Image (cartoon, rainbow, N blue to C red; front, top):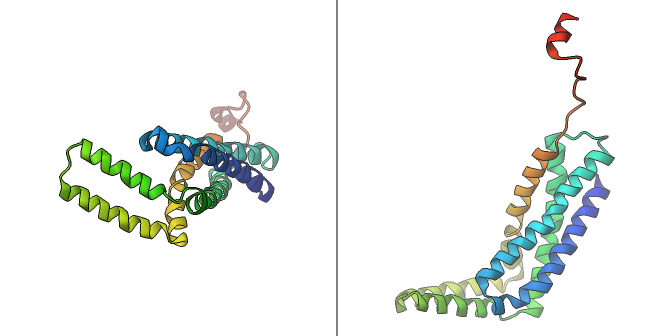
Length: 185
């Protein structure tokens, strides 16, 4: 199980990291709302490795069978590895490549609020909120904890769906041995 989990987890981790590095620097240019859509699309694409990892385990180790519990365990471990890769990549990007991310995002939010006709009091409250957010994000441990929570639910949902779709218990009865025929035998 370890080899399959590591293989598919690291493939998914490389995918999510590469796509983050290729798309996130353009968040300001394409708009933060579109960037959020792109970000979750990137997550779904990388978490497809959960499906393929569970299927590989079922076919190569389980002899074509896998219980829901085992499938979920394999998928959850792959999800964990991909999520850790996401966090590590985000930490590097935030602290080294995009140190102005929160400031750019704050500017975007304030412009959006002004366009919607928000009062100065609401804008000041948002500025204060974003100042506190930046203080939290500037702490690498808090940043990592917050970042870990972003991809994890997506990965767990894909793990749940994949586990349900791929589970196989035992072999089905041959067509000639229906339950009613077994009772008569």
